[in-house]
Length: 126
Image (cartoon, rainbow, N blue to C red):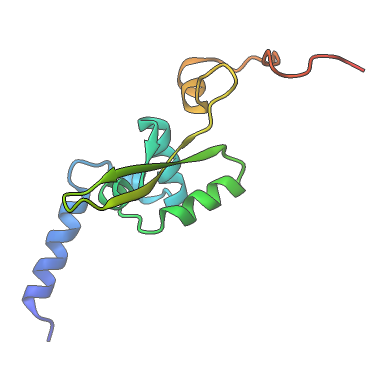
């Protein structure tokens, strides 16, 4: 016999997970795709945000996978002092900026793809 508390708790968790979200679109995304989408929409992600918003516990592993797939993601180490006076550090991940200063996410949102080389690229033809 199944405990009714367990069933009620599981149902409450399931319903709270889908509230305010388009469950159909997020169900099919891998964790790596969710992280990439989050970075593109918000500019950066850190481990706490990944746990809180995406329920992803191994953010570093997903970043490794995204880098292996060719996404130019850079790490910035953030530092702060907690309430006890201890220095705390964490990683924040964002898309690498191109030489003109725009991130890849900004390029995707605001620019159309032109096949012209960037000013920093070597345009000499051999």
